[in-house]
Image (tube, rainbow, N blue to C red; front, top):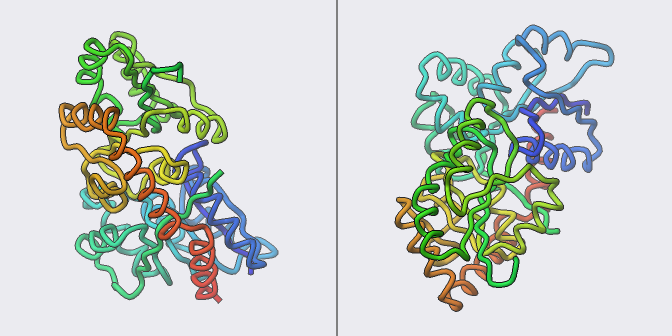
Length: 324
């Protein structure tokens, strides 16, 4: 089966990584899957024309109900959609976008949510048929200066990731304890916001903004860090959190629905609801060896049990069979 796969392919972002992985799953079942950047298309008519080219595509998949899914509204081939996270958490608040996403969901053969929470929210905000939405957690592949405690905040530089949230509190902590540092690593997605992050980072003691790295380099940095930090305002499911758990790195994550679907406080990681609480739980992580060992072991076990590549591969192969 020849499939068109639409996703937002900004390099080294979570959506890009997820799309590459799902494509590999589909192709390993013998299908042909052409991955294209949704940003390359201005309208659904363009995509419909592409699908009809010889030899034509026989089905399609899109990540993100609005950014990808709306481009499939004019196609005559069966398609499925994968929720991106911001579509259900943010875009549903905009009436015009919500109306479009409802049409996409009505026409889709299936939809995939990364968590039960995301599925439940889609059912509340969109006129969805619940039986269409499958919950399939993301799969992950596993692949300091002495005494320095590096906290690594991995995110694309855009407002929804809120990398500035912790800076003031972290700087105060660094002033008290110069051995703790916060390093922010990620692609510059929003140029205007990136300038703001660069400016504030430069005047924040103990905070450094690093250039984006290859996945291999990023994983090496994670392994050397004291913890992987997440400070997002909203998440679908953070690939960085899952990768950290798989690499046996403690996770300190903001207490939001997308994160609490994965991080159980003091079990698979640590949660915080304010910058001050982040400092408190992080201080505890540095001195409580038993806590650290427990969340690392439980996080690794959680990823192996709930986010294996094999389970994800089998699920997408079954879903693609529904497009026949």
